[in-house]
Length: 307
Image 1 (cartoon, rainbow, N blue to C red):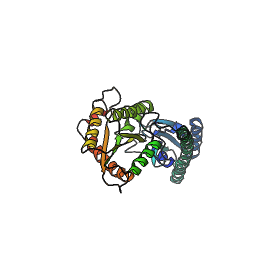
Image 2: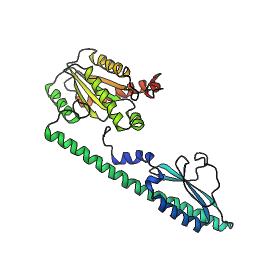
Image 3: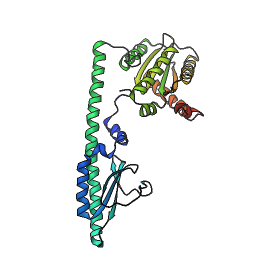
Image 4: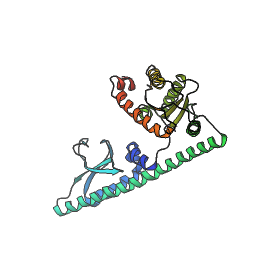
């Protein structure tokens, strides 16, 4: 997968936005269940998706398309996100029965939320296990066969890059430029066009990093959309010029779908007592500052969205 494997806890919080009610329930069984509820409580029911699209209608439910913002009904929530709304028309004439029906419907939504949560956790856990297995197999293969290159990009893979970092550390070479490079809005491309195009974006950026580099530069892909570049015995201004060349080359890339853009941050190791790992954190901070400036610059969104 282009972006690597995130933690299960993080993906459970994020991926629920991609699920609909029919992903979490057997719709025919749910409809029969709601029919029983409608009969017992003497109510008409409307179950909608998160944005108001009708999913199940039970009884004579005469109502225009609901405004889920101003009138959300009873919210059906999973991991803190609303996945649906339940609307009711209470047909009971007796106040006491109407009150009991309302309490019953509150319990119904709570039970549906529990069922949806369990179904969601089961589905995402299975996917997570599959992705983790693939990742572990890939890393095991790389270690076993001594692979140096990242398969997608051709730059050094994370394991081998970290070995090169240790070699440079032991050699006590100074100065060393430490450059952090991160692709801007990789997730936007992944969400809009899918994994194939988002992987192509990563490959394009990696190609540019190599094209603009000198032979002695050490380039590694350290995360899904993140790269690190080391320049041993860097000359004054060399790292800054390299970053500008990379960004200019990205901005000059013309394509109907992807619009490569990277944020860069760099710091210099000038003392043998400093560690490259510590300096990477400083370079990453500079990169995030650069990312903020780029993403708020005039014309950035228009280029990204091909407006």
